[in-house]
Amino acid sequence: MKNGKSLIATLVLFAGLSPVGADVLCVRINERTGDNREGARLRLRTACRSDEMQVDPVAIGLLGPQGPIGPSGPLGATGPIGATGPMGASGPQGSQGAVGAAGPAGPNGPAGAQGLQGPQGLTGSVGSTGAIGPQGIQGLAGAAGVAGPTGPLGPAGISPFTMALTPTPTVAEATLTGVLINGGLVTSTVDPGSTIQVSLAYADAHLGCLGCIEQIQFGFSDQDPIGCFFDQSQGDLIAGSVSFTVTAPSTPGTYFLAFERAQDFGCFVSSTSWWNGTPVAANYFAMITVH
Image (cartoon, rainbow, N blue to C red):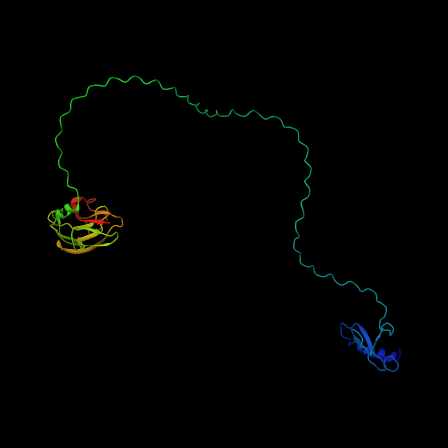
């Protein structure tokens, strides 16, 4: 190799400037001689180009013998504790120890309580029925008794005919007149759940208790009253005419509109029931047939 001094001088200059990661030393080739070009610079490359040749650093004295091992550096800080590893498998079970000697017998315990009485035994079977005895002779017929007196005549049943001929109903000084159902007779046939128009005149004599506050309740006799068409606590006059509506029952059948006089602080103040219990036939003022 020619121009060794020039190569070494150039390599010394390159030694302080060589980039990190270069793999080989390369120098350009003289095209005529095939040797390195005089004055050419060494270059550090990962691989030499086609117009360059690789230089052996040992041959030109760049790589010396290996130096002695340097002293150990200081001990680094302890790293963090690693995660706990999984639990190892259980070891095999040891063999059973020898059976110990039997201990001395303990003292006798106290006598236990008496046991419960056993269940009663089964009842024995019923004996067979005895034979039926002979029938006795029939006795003579007794004489007919004397006929009792005839009972009083019961009240007439309620019907459209009797309702139409019933006198003006009066209950405890409260009297109704001029009753109209849907503008007609007090007997009316209507549809289930339909609206029934009622108009009437009333008078409450109010003589038995001049200081009492009175009302006149109305409704179907087999249900709680619907309301009051006269309520003295509301300033109603003791005689007048009213019109109101009721809703026909939803189940087909015959129903009676009834009225009752009450003496409360106002309509339904103390109770929402009929004042004197379920109305009777004398309290009826109209018969409604739901078909």
